[in-house]
Image (cartoon, rainbow, N blue to C red; front, side):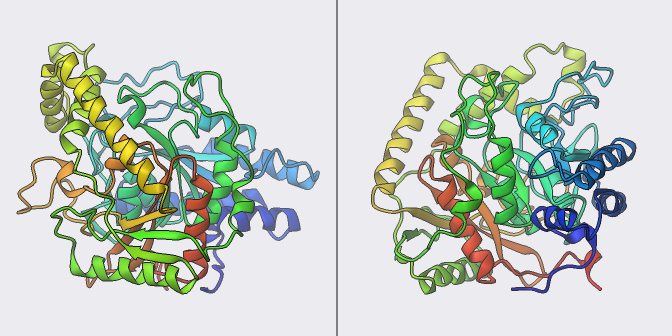
Length: 473
């Protein structure tokens, strides 16, 4: 394992709360350090839509008083948190990357995950960037511009939770809330070298309901799996506003981290059995991570799940959802939209109810197939994405031949269709020093198992990659 960081902004949430409890440092000191990093991260990557220093310091002072009294509000009291600008946060605008959203508000309500963090004493640092309405796998928007990658700001941070990924990677808070409708925490997690989890659908309550329906999830974006487990224990709290929530989680995610990897049945699929050109450095790094699992006692078999690419069904559901997002806009507002978003909305508006239901049929068949597959295998391992970060400001890599972001993300969106838990963690860097991610996919409701295996890989050193250049000595 690596040497523990010494700068307060580089400490994990778990380490921060231990330090508060022991009196080593205060939430005020930690938040000041994070605010300094947030300003630097914004200057380097444009990852924030808002940094609320006054509110953060006020919250830190209140937290410090609770810790001095020995009465923390919850397990993340005093921990700096950022929130993707698709998620409602009381008192500040949620602009969704769109010039069509009016900033005046009023902004009087927290989304469920934000409310649970607030109740637990978390300190909110700011809102992070997203593409307009979270529609694509990179982060640039008409309202806030382009978000760059912490390892090379000329390249994309990924998306649609790219601002959150960049903020976490650069020390602007160890915890961030992202959303994932087709890979939107995992893609930027892979590109920025952090951990990100798309939990089983319904495990983290979501409100308002997403126009993308049951494809959309809220998930933790953190420095490691232990912090994600901590965050999950907070944000999974029940909320009546989400009628599809699963209710309280069965057991402790943090306690589950200590479980064994030995004996787990792991399926390694280098390309899901599809004709995907995975970069050789990525293929090698992911295979090395799988070898580590085998060394820890997992029973590994290289096998594909036997599914076909559901991209057309995904497009039907995703583009229809996008069309619903903008349905209320007049022609003047539609002219303000990201041109790519406008294109998919026009396509989505042409689908019929029968087209939509056919896509639902494909989705159900895919879910059944993966359910059958997981009756034989506890975990599926794939690359998170088949490439590393490319030019910022582009939806697809130059010369790739792809027309939409789904063309280069074949390993992420299938598991939004199936509602399975899926996580990414770093497993190396390419020749340009850009992070590589490995994806762990569990059966529905096996969130704790995914976190356990990810934690084992962290403990084994698989995720040890260089810090972003701006943070190196």
